Length: 377
Image (cartoon, rainbow, N blue to C red; front, side, top):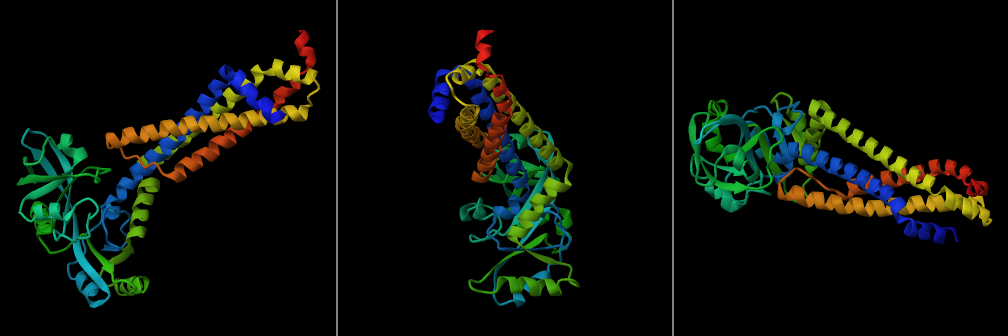
């Protein structure tokens, strides 16, 4: 009977409970959107790794984030070639430059040098073989679609990087930089554009894979044992990506600020939800008093309130999920870094439901006012 009354009350008094449902939905949207934005933005810091197909990265020891890599000696590759089970060894360059467009103005860019072979590992998920072939011509570059307006250029257009002429030969999608614009080119062109690489054969990273069924962990450990004197270190792609994300999230001021903003959003949503739901219960005191006059016990009234809180939470979550998916679609259209994971939605749902139940428990104190005598006042 309690469940039936709870449902009927929600349907009949929907205007009273609608603000609570909207508040729950609003709280859910805040948590999900903030969490998805946080994951999307911090994930951008590891795009060089996650958009590549290399299992292992070799770089300078002590590197904190993939975008902060320092040069390692070219002869580091010798240690890799000695291992018979290592395959697809290729260099990866990360440099910097000053972009000057034909329409005037300029901006700092990250110069990303990759191997142009069709089956190359670096950025293989977003730079297909046909695109890599375009980079065989000296002075050619690729840019991300999100950076076209910033660079004021399109395919076929020319510009200068560090005073050297380059031509855009293609547009990619999926390398929107967190701290700047990425310009992809061949290894040779990257060395020509950044004098720091042109003076030597050093690279930022070496990428490699391991043959199937080979002891990958043992090979990594063996390389790291001999790496001390040769000044390099080997990370798995997963470890390097995670390390880059943690650095941005915990070491940078921007990451801490975003976490703080997310916590504030969750707190606001929680307070709005609890207060709105308690107000809805308080407005139903006359109805609860009537039930008491009909002989319904306080225990049964508590069940009704908790049931109502549960239904408000579920309905609010449905509203929140709908708006969150809509927000994800809009973010995708405008290429906003937005990573809507199932884990984020589940975590937000658990938090919101707990808040709804907590608000219901707090609202139980109002039931003491549900005395039949209040109907005579």
